Length: 183
Image 1: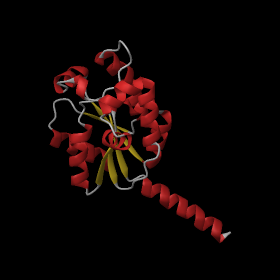
Image 2: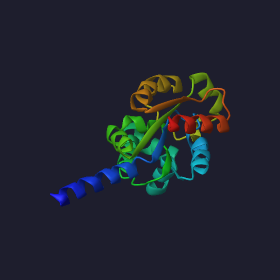
Image 3: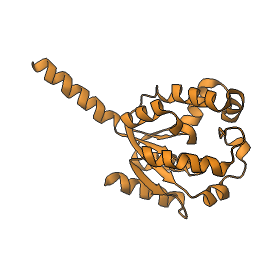
Image 4: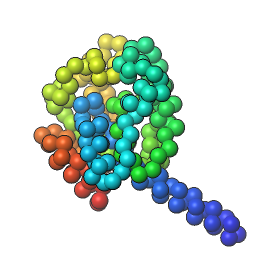
């Protein structure tokens, strides 16, 4: 009986250890990578960018992968790679399309707190200078605005914390994320 209690306690401790990750979700241009690096530095955590991880594992630029694999192929590759992430004490910046993979999102929820960086569409347009180099997986005939409208409810669905990024410097955004994590 003591072994069962000990195993349960170890499982609970493992779960708590995994929950010390902070996962950033949001549209391209919302500040996930930039604020993620500064957040990791300010909290003494490591940093991972899943877009870079995908590029590294697939051996090609994200945009080239999105172009060659197509929308559903890209989502499948992204989900496979993200579902295998095993880190602790890490800020994880995800690609904007991560919310299309239910398996990915379930895994990320299991290993951390999900923070949605909410930025309005006009602000996204102001920040993104060249959509063709961002690795954005658009469906055929889809505009960036359509993509924004499609993804926003998914970001809201998965978020544990939502932080508005409009009109804030990166430092202000990082401070607000950290303050929300303390609550």
